[in-house]
Image (tube, rainbow, N blue to C red; front, side):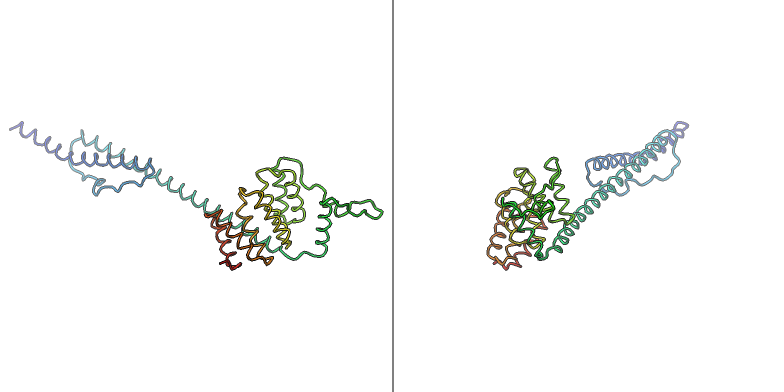
Length: 295
């Protein structure tokens, strides 16, 4: 009878602790599943119903019950740490996405602003500008410029012929020429890009320089010169990263010159050579197809 009375509480304690240990085993398995999912970048699995339910307090012994409480405390601490790490990763992903979206919007805004500023400057050339351009063309063609009367200073043709680009690498000289364009100093930018092309015709930036040279003419409504510059860019630098923009601007310039068929031919070539353009280029091309009434 004494043995029976002594063994009854022990059996009861073992029976009470067993469900708690089973819950702890399930928690450990769930925690391992969550850890693997986080390290692999996957969505953590949904916990099984009742897996993390706390056990009810029952009058059990101090042996296995104390061990179970320690394991439960460690699991809870690990789960809190893992949840914090997961939230940090999610926050980092959201931050990177927001910065990328802001960068894309900023680039689009800057390109659009530059195009608007350059379009606003597109106005008919004054007689003085036409005279200066003619004098510059004669000087470039090798014809002597008229000598000044008495004071010995350089003529406008000689001033236009003077070097604009600073010494340096092709990249540095290209950036300087482009800075003149951004500052809307189109006359100086024209000379700078011409000088760059004369000195670095085979450089990887030559196609870009040829395109921006055409833009210096286009913004001043010198459409004939712009068309020649863009056409030269299409023929001489077909593999330049500016080739799609060069063909498109050639089509726009030809349309403004009244050469609609030639403009449509240029747009057709643009579609054939670049069937998968950027969203910006596709939008501009569709607008130009409508403006030129291409069939």
